[in-house]
Length: 255
Ligand code: NAP
Image (cartoon, rainbow, N blue to C red):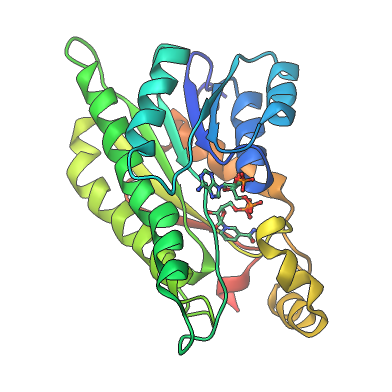
């Protein structure tokens, strides 16, 4: 279907070396996009899969805990790939502790990566996209990665819940400002997926059973389950979709 075809587009995916970011990068490449992986660890494995799909692959090094990293990552991506059409803000971290004990560094580290860097990546991307649009149609797609804790409170994850609740608000705000400029800003809220991020939960027998018991689909998500939603929000099929957060959660929120 042409409206799901990403040929000729370049997607920048943060944290594409592993987990959900890797699966999203591979899905976008499968739909025809070239990929720029931005992160602090080598994404060579992702690069192999992208090359296997016949698409170009570039890597830019960025630690999104650092204040200047977002703008620099967009600049480096444009230098490497010529232009960027799709931005997937996937890189994220989580820290667990009782709210009474929660430290300032567990607050700041999470907020810096999960929400501060997301805003400044969006800003630098939007400047790039609008800056090149003088004589033609501007079209940019932003996909932010939210969470079930964009809807629910969670427990012992104060900064994570705050950051992911912020992601849905920021997605709506940026959609309001940029929809008329030809930039779609949307989010995906993954449910419970088997990645490094959720290893501690899966290893805790009772939490694991509790979580599985609440997922109508009856199993943890596989990262590849996110591919279809990512391709949709990156492609022209979603040109009139703005400011929404699409849960991909095996039915968790319906429970
Ligand atoms: P993951 O396997 O831990 O991957 C996290 C990614 O973020 C890795 O590529 C990691 O790079 C990168 N990252 C972390 N801190 C970074 C930094 N300072 N600079 C650059 N990159 C950094 O976890 P995941 O489950 O795939 O998570 C991806 C996103 O989905 C996160 O935003 C997470 O909150 C969200 N999410 C996950 C789930 C789930 O069930 N798994 C559910 C809802 C939302 P390194 O490998 O170098 O650390």
